[in-house]
Length: 266
Image 1 (cartoon, rainbow, N blue to C red):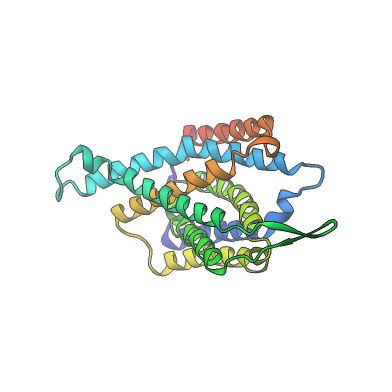
Image 2 (tube, one colour):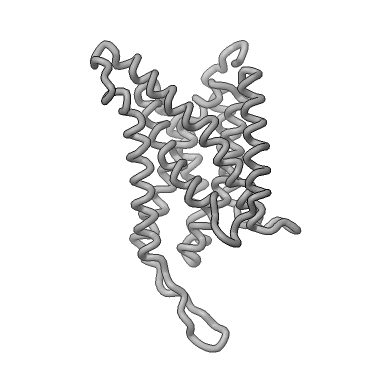
């Protein structure tokens, strides 16, 4: 842990710097996915391994810690019961189910390519309503990420940097999925709006920072459920889109970094 806690101004400045890094990764995602001499399946699998390590070694323990903090905060109001102890995990489950439902809706209405002549294809119209609903859900997801960024810096700058790394590479892969679903709309408006949502989350934190332990735990659990779905859907690709050696490289590297930071106290 830090020898001296960050001031509010320091936390906001640090959170802004990390927010700008995440926004930049959103905008540069297509170039990152197609790095010279590195197959796209290698970058995808490396990012997948890294994100899976983050989920098991940091996200799940963080949700469990939030459950304990909620129990302590509500101890004077509610009698501790097994049902109350499940509260935060139910919130995480709601986040998981909500994003899964949106993904199913997007898959069902995804435009299908159709032949229009020799060697040519055309894409059917992309439903605007589904697109904006899907994009809006990811925008809300991004707002939550940066709204709680200053709190992550209070946990420790190293943890916040590792979180930013995991989320940044995670964005690279969700970018691929959104572009595949909406090849016309997303490149024109999606990336810019998702990057703007990150900045909106930081601004919301600057003017209306979370102060309630319960609220912070609930937001973390909701975000956690969404991250769980997106990690396992987007970052464990099947068939020819994956490379197990690269996946294992990302997993081992991130696990080593995270355990090292934990041993040193953040």
